[in-house]
Image (cartoon, rainbow, N blue to C red; front, side, top):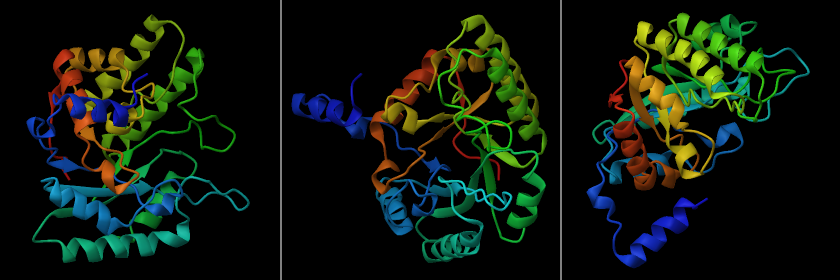
Amino acid sequence: MIHPERFIKTLLKKGNFDASDIPVLSANYHTHTWRCRHAEGLEREYIENAIEGGMKVLGFSDHTPYPFPKGYRSTYRMDVSQLEEYAATIGNLKEEYRDDIDIKLGLEVEYYPAYFEALTQLTDQYPFDYFILGQHFLGNEMGDAYSGMPSPSVRKLHRYVVQVKEAMETGRFACVAHPDLLYFVGPEEDYEREMRHLCIHAKKLDIPLEINFLGIYEGRHYPRELFWKIAGEVGNKVIFGCDAHRPDMVINPFSMQEALKLAERCKLERVTYLDI
């Protein structure tokens, strides 16, 4: 596996990698903050990098808090007690930078049926512009494995697709982040059948699917080309998302280049801006 940072340095030494030849990502709606416990840097640093890179819209969509039962604390999302401060911070920055860039306030949200209504009652108290769906766990998180763990289970694959479809039906989500996160290592015909159902549902509801730059940058199992071939056949709308966990990841020419190649190979219809 080629590490992108080393790959880019090698190309620069050879003189055949020119980031100026790669189109600018005009809008990114997938940006995290330090509150999720696995991102770093200040919001202002993300914004300044986005402006310097020519971005027009930057959406913050940190991992949502969830009103879980007492005694359970998720380790990779902000606490409920941090939500008000998060919304206020992004709101203040939106006003401060309004002449330079359009800042959006969002959340990356899993659909957990047992707690989703309580979550929306909480988030409706604040001026959120959008949610993106990132189904990192099945069920209601507690007692279920991470969706990105390799598994040959067709049952798990089916559960993932059903839960994502149910999430889209709520009307709350502007796009589906890394829809190919589910790491299925069973027969491709099973994967193709189930994921085609997901893509058809997204097409019916006119919800874009995200090609995830973090997966490209870190050499993860996604983006999975088979998924995007299906999306191309179905005719899904596709949006690019940085999934930035550091300020320097907001402008990512390597991932942009690879995402453009993937979109071309799979004949994908790319949209630049979310309808929010």
